[in-house]
Image (cartoon, rainbow, N blue to C red; front, side, top):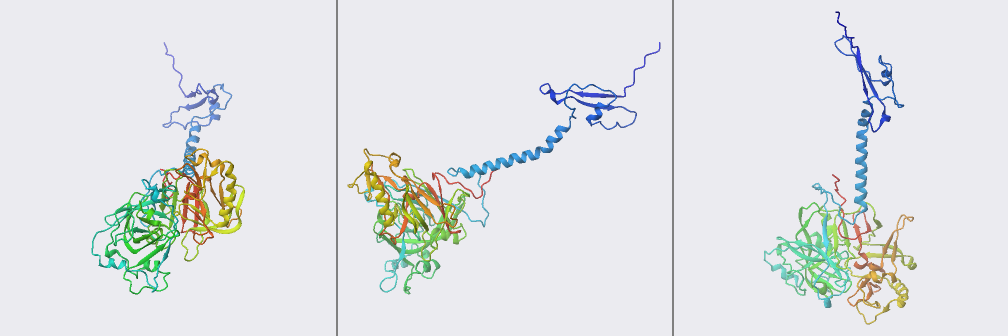
Length: 554
């Protein structure tokens, strides 16, 4: 019986059904043709060819038939652009978050600065504690170098004793800053000075040129201080021919030809004074990348303090000079190429006080700052600018009359000129219906007694209005204002009364300058940019600084 011959297979077709959850994708048909040649023909890829194959198959889906490889090619082709877009959006979100929320520390990682790149130093500010309040008076610094006795020379009688010193004892200092406006009246930090280094508490003062420490030269008039007196070493005393000595004594009419050491004398606006000689010793600071920096700086060895200054020295050791002068600490560090000549401080409004300060520009915000030009007048080393208007609520205290405003962290309170102060007091008379003036309270010139003692400004701030200072700006259409809320000019004393922390400045400095002291500098980050000659501020809780320079996102 002749066997039945099987039909020869000439090809086959693969039909791929759509997913059950999405039948709209349609079927995919792939046809293969067999031949006797060694290599098979190329795979049919065009869906239109599939419909014309030798084995037609009806298509049920109304959608066009698609090849299985086409969607994946398109997806993988677009994948790099999708990922790039996601990364770009993520970076933008990080930058916005990093910039907008500047009250918290957002430092994802630290990048070590290049060797030749200026660093920055961050110093905490602290409230003073355990002080005898009966010995505390508020401060007014604005120190200036004075000197020259009747014979034209600096008083060197006491300092001549230093020439015979042969002690090899080194000195040191440590730097944190603490304080509040009331009741302690100052903010201080500490520095590590000497070799080996030792800590010294120093009053942070943007209105003083020279950094000085009480020292045993021996000391003629010194307070107990927070630490033992600095002991000078003869090899670290500055001679009269050195650059910093010439800078300090440049206003002396007749140089002292017989002086062996560089004497100085500083008189402050509150009539306090200090006298001493210049030293050069090692200062240690922690850089923002965590490393320790050591360098020699010039500072004062103060052996004779007089006046109210002795009260603030009960728990500090001296003053940290932060002005624009060449002898100030920021200028010295900038001159050594260690930092850019930028200073910033932020004083918290919290009752416990404190805050932080920094040297260098690593913590200067990129945006969100209000900037005004820094005035630059020969022989005036203060941070000051020009104000055009001052308002209390809707009432004008100063209108289109140019005046000067000094930013002084060495003054506890704010001082207005006679005209502005009188106008403010007149407007505050309206409080008589809500608060009663307590003339028996001598905390400050003007204090009010509420119906019951209060603990915070929040309990009475509704009775007061904000102060607004409008500054001159080269872009007239951009308002440049500093808003001082009630907590920026009021204090609550230990009697539970509320007192005005703005005083009559007609007898202070030149009598025509407004001085913004610590009470009005709280709650904001202030930047004094000596590189670009400008002063800036922005609102802050002063808890932590935000580092901008060298921030890495990954």
